Every structure is written in structure tokens, then in C-alpha cells.
Image 1 (cartoon, helix red, strand yellow):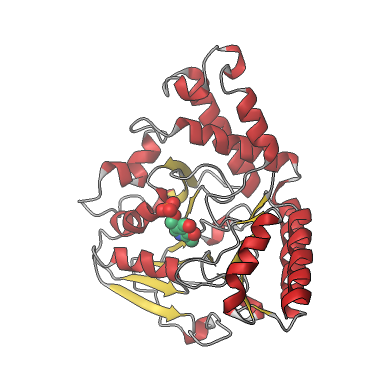
Image 2 (cartoon, rainbow, N blue to C red; image 1 turned 90 degrees about the vertical axis):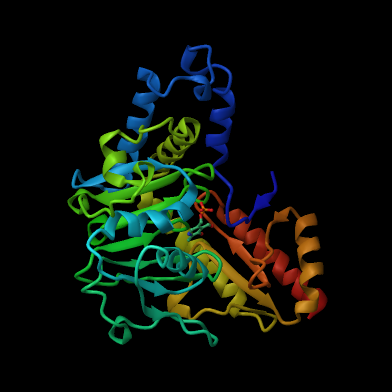
Length: 357
Ligand code: PLP
């Protein structure tokens, strides 16, 4: 298969897809596909529980936290966050580091007062301001931030602090390395990057926060209600959870998140070194805030973008076009991207530079 650098839906481990294909028509001798089985059957319930247990092992999640499987993509949580935590009428605080933070903030405005406590600078190189320079979120219903901005390629490599509960949209970084879950109060992530099929959302919620929901919070979005129903308030996306479970199992077999961190650090370091070592390519983000998962880069002459992309495609390096709102290129190098893919991309970039610079 070619190397797929798409930001999401993104490449999944080949071994996982092969296994899913083998089990497609006959899951574990049942004569049924997993997606044909009742969500109330003991097999499906056990599979969902096994996926949860595997995720808990990977991230070291204690029983103080619920692990929920929800639907509607990460974007549905942009509304669910204020609805679950906004019952007390306090303002909602947001750190605006890029396009996904901005979308989360815009949605929250529908439900109450939003405070932008800090924003990433717009000038190049783009950077996250230190927390000393932020407004305080201590009297807010929560402090929301986006640890990795998928479009902008900006990532927190440090943990903000607040007396307010800390909520993180970890869609494009969850499972890329070990995480101190206890530092967070709510973590949510759309699955279509490091986890599985689009539509599924993984939530990790500190149970202490239950009881803060706004009275208008729909049951399907209510974390406490979802938790009590074992993520089966309605028919859950069983096939997506099954696939996520296979990915969790694969991660454990790879040596867990410490092993992934090692690989991901190496991939990102080699790609940024290639960009920084060239006059032809550039990255718009301050070195300290660069993303491990999404690496945007520009060519010295934007007129060459189209040629770059068509040659890359022909070389089996797919989906390198930057987000339509920012242009340039972006290589997303999630868990399932091997070092060989990054090495092939670097070689291609160097050849292209020699030919066109
Ligand atoms: N948040 C981040 C950081 C994302 O990268 C994305 C999608 O790429 C989303 C939210 C939206 O996810 P979804 O399309 O699942 O709603």
C-alpha cells in the first residue's frame, strides 16, 4: 500500500485491518460479522468491556474516571462540554491555539459566556503564550484547551494548570505517547486519527464532575447518563468500538505508549530536521510548540505546490496537501505511519528540492 499522510480519517495499522478482514464474515466462529450482532449480546458486551480495559491499561486510567464510547465525532463534544459542565452559570474558558480551539469556542458561545484566556500568536513563528500571560480561568466552569492543533501543527508540550476543571480535545494526539490522565478532568478524542473509524469518540471523564450538567443537556450527550448505561444508552457504534479495541490490542503488543512515544519522537525529529536543514522548506511553528503528529510545511515558492503534490502522489506519498484554510503541505505521522514512510518522504523532498530549487 502507498504511504497515507492524511490528517484523518487516517492510516490504521495494517495488522488490524487484516485481522478485521479475516473476521468480517465469521467473527469467532459465530457465523456472523461483528457488525451484525446485537449490542446486548454477551459477545458484544464482552468486546466493548475488553476494549475499555485495554485502553485503561494503556493510559493507566483509574476508576475515578469513566471511559465512554460516544458518537457524533469530536465536534459533538464541542457542545457536550458546556452542556455537561455549565449547569452552574459560570463562564467557559478557552485557550485558542488554532482552528479546532476556535470551533470549540464558537460552539460553546451558544450555551453561555465564553472567555478567551489566551491565544496563539498569529505572527511567524506561531507560538503558545506562557501561562503567566493568560487570564485566569479559576472562576470558570472549566478551562478547555486543544493539546494538539491538527490543522495548525501547534502542540502543547507542557500542562496548563487551573482551579477549574481542565478539559482537553485530544483528537489528534491521544495514544501517541504516555499521558498523566490525573492532570486532566475530561479528555475527548475523535477516533479517526490514532484510534479507529470516524464518528466514534472516546471520552475519559472524572466522575466527580457529575451533577454539573445543564438541565437542557440531551441524554445522548450526558456523560453521567452514558456512563450509567455502559455507553449503550442507544445502539452504540459496535463495529467502530470493535476496531478501536483491535487497535488498543495492537498498541499493547507494540510495547504500549512508551514504545509509541519513542517511535513518534524519532519520526517527528527526523522530519523537522529535514525541513530546518533546507532553505527550500519551512515550518511556521516555534520549535518548542511543534506537533509530533501533524507537520505543516511550506515550499519556498507556492507556485510549486501543485507539482509537488502530483509528484508525491505518483511516488506513493498520499494526502500531503495542507488544510484548505492554510495551504502548503501537511504530513500527518500518526502511530500507524512507520519510520520508513517518513524516510521516504524526506528522500522525496530532498530530490524535489534538488530538481526545483
Ligand atoms: N478536534 C480536533 C483537534 C480535530 O483534529 C478534529 C478533526 O480532525 C475535530 C476536533 C473534529 O472531529 P470530528 O470530525 O470527529 O467531529
